[in-house]
Image 1: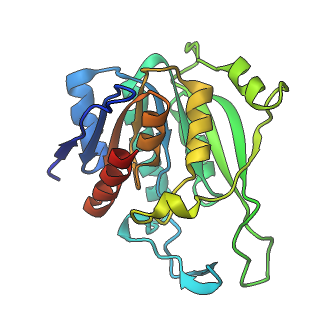
Image 2: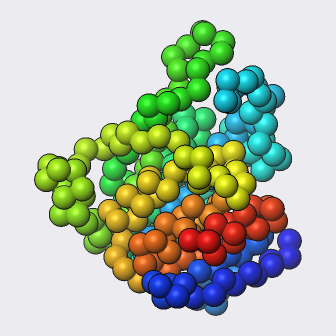
Length: 261
């Protein structure tokens, strides 16, 4: 697959570097590593959840299909897991020796992610639960309402001396140790004014992640950039950003959001 590179200008206020690479993250990361080696301080990834199987959900009070696109269709547990190992291995390569990664997901993918991390000898640091106070109702009424996503935080390997801004997190939490359950709403309406992505994360969530795990001018990667929330959060918090996104329309959406800032 051809890699199309779209470079955004340096943000005038924060003087951070932002770039979107359009293409398959496996190919892009192979090319990137061959040219740049261990480059990133932190990675946030929101990979496919493999949920697009013809099911339904509730959105704005209406019943809608959950099919998000071919990129989200399951190819079976074994092939899905092979894909997770493949992209995580590449992310591990481009991380600096003390770099860390956070990966979000629902129950449909997160157990594969955690096992893959163990298989490639990453060091799992935390299991964060993002609790949503406003989840869509469960239409089938045959199980509990899905109201959480899991974020696994891991270091490159067991030798990594990871960064954690403990004091900042404590200050943010009324001078108490921050727990691993975070309650935040889904993206607000104004976060979707340029368009929407079916798995878009709230800017509040990514802001907290960056403030916890990085410092100013660090280089951050998002291999599944989607609507560009990670890039926008990097611009707000004075972090450099490189994102990878396979869908052209989401590359365009990311550019609009980051340029508007």
